[in-house]
Amino acid sequence: MPDNYILVVDDELRMRKLIKDFLMAKGYNIIEAEDGEKALEVFQENKNKIKLILLDVMMPKLDGWSVLRQIRQESRVPIVMLTARGEEQDELFGFELGVDEYITKPFSPKILVARVEAILKRSEKDITEIEDHAGIEVDKEGRTIKVEGKVIELSLREYELLIYLIENENIALSRDKILNNVWNYDYYGDSRTIDSHIKKIRHKLGKKGKYIKTMRGIGYKFEIK
Image (cartoon, rainbow, N blue to C red; front, side, top):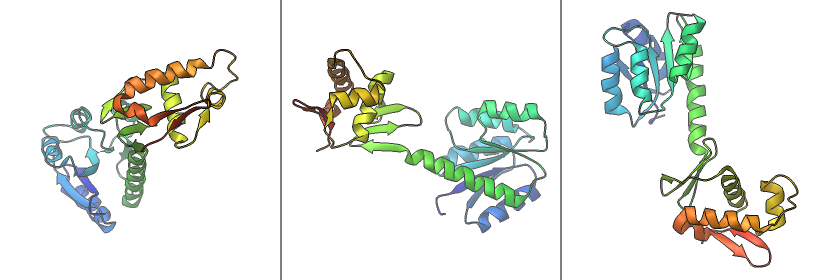
């Protein structure tokens, strides 16, 4: 796992060594920090390769909550909070700030490793869910569309229509089929409402709008050539 760097932040040397030994045995690369200020410094220097942070709450100079807040201003890197506290209100506070997991000391190192592996698998899956169709990026989890890296504003219906076309790439879709699958009911109005939506989507996609082909006498097709 050469690219899986984990930042371990804890003011106790023994705790850092314990975590480091178990994670390195699984093939992870470990970066350490002994206090909050050092954690932010190390993160800035290595943020492009750090895949997860194990962050203690009670530390000198800058506590874990403060570190968490600053990191969340610029990054969604998974963060697991480590703390001796076990109160529900502390856990809720952590989740509100953007914590991905919350582990109370003392803990089993093997359980910690298992949670780390589960979180990394989830985060890797989230990344793969972003699809690229010749410059049209689809983030289904975030329900956003980007063209050449820039988010385009689509109404809910426009978004669903574009997704339906993309998911059926190279297939000629009749207007009736589009209505039944995107509008989710038998539409008794004018089917030209689809034409209106397609026109708006093409305009918003700019040059990429050419991928939505008009199939004369049938409907539409998403095709990249």
